Length: 500
Image 1 (tube, rainbow, N blue to C red):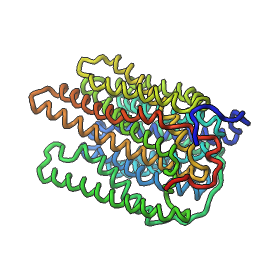
Image 2 (cartoon, rainbow, N blue to C red; image 1 turned 120 degrees about the horizontal axis):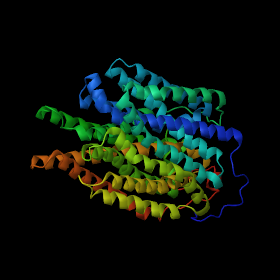
Image 3 (cartoon, helix red, strand yellow; image 1 turned 90 degrees about the vertical axis):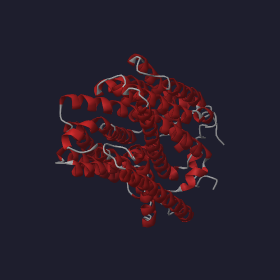
Image 4 (cartoon, one colour; image 1 turned 180 degrees about the vertical axis):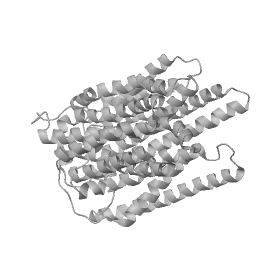
């Protein structure tokens, strides 16, 4: 039974113990650095194509390899966080991330840079589930919303600062300095963690199921690979019919392998969870609050990640802004999300989900529908205001969704719930980017073929892409009224959620 109003008992304490506070702030800082790095590569791709002498299709692997690694590693984090103590997992993740960043900085060519991105992604994939699981473990239920508000600062601010920072570096320095700026920050976080990080919670010894790992890699990796390649299938300079056919068959094979492997993965987890040996325990979906929140996050992630990919292209190709200028256009919205995060968390603690999700979903949908009307004459200031309003709508949504989803689970399922949330976001984000990029490119090409200018084609493609995002976001308005704040005693149960 859940409620949407504040019926929590008088809190025993309104702040974390010093040890727990240090751990949470360390994880927040590390997650910020990891996400900041993840969002800088898109702006750097054109420079890498010129400097490394590679094609656009080859350059796409710098993001594709990162997304593939994330999709493969995140489902395994539920097991890792149960088996190993917090300190060891943190140091391992930050060491991987730092090593990958150093490797990228000194990479002599494209192959080594791809390997570096894979190593970076391995550390990044562990960091967010570790943060979410630790936060849910140490933060009392009555102040959990305000702490999740701080997580929303990380999730919103880093993706906005990343492109702006990358644009500034690329306008003045070499692309290597993107990694040169991130590396010392990562090493500082690693050194601080080695000094101050402590273990939180208890570990459980369990054998890892190798077939589940393989099926997870093939399933999630196949789906994300297929999604990431949709936009380039059959396109490109000098592409022959044979090459286009090969690309089509590659996509079909990726999706087929992914679907079959995912079905087998789910079947195996359903069997193993009966004896508590599942790599990713799917009993988390037995909690209605978790399932509804994750479904809402899936829709928002498709719309959000697709939108933040399409908008910079519109700003640069249609409104002719520089990379740094386009980054500055979305920066006010990111700052608004960061400022509002803790406030929204306090509102959640006091009033629950509906007072946040309802206006948040309406604002987000309204802006996406407005974006379906933009063209070559739209003022950049109007876009800046619209993007700020969209960011506020997303801030009103993500904080209560993160908190309500994991708060609906018993404590022993936090690590598996965090892994599910991370996996859903990664796959949904890849789907949103692929879908909107493909639609935008096809529409733009159609306008040019019928005699329109390239700018007119880009503008038309942008409008259609945002139409897709707006339609996808519409059901979130209904979902806003279905999701409830969990009872504060939901985590006290040692039993799996009800349902099958």
